[in-house]
Length: 159
Image (tube, rainbow, N blue to C red; front, side):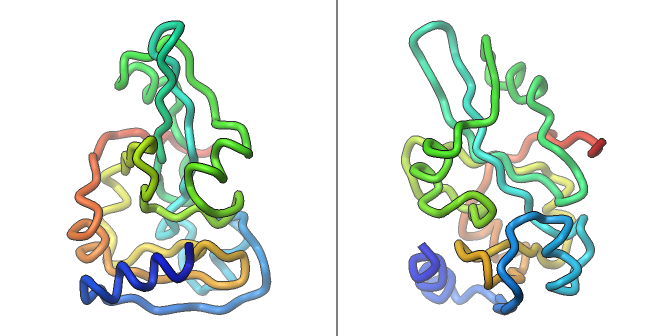
């Protein structure tokens, strides 16, 4: 997935920097290693939303690193009847990388990308680049141009 990401960004002429660090996937710990404010990190969470009894939808929720995903808000937004974090197996299968390294890009057709607009107010966003030992700083304008994300208020204060 790392190679797929770099190839995509290079193909689009995106401005990014790679940052090597000790292996770590938790936003609040890896952000100081990268030298970024936690609020500038893209926290990427795969969420499962049930739409009635038979339909399950998966969302790649991307929020600032100092926030959490508002699960109930996401459930209401999508008209769901139940919401939870996806189990690790589903999240890693849909994201194409292990937990802690999930990218803010939805490469799988069954994964809908929804980004909190507050993250897009930054110059750059920081995230693990599908690896625990390497992160990326990506210009937000390039991220938006490549992903054309659905933006919704899905972040809630951490705590």
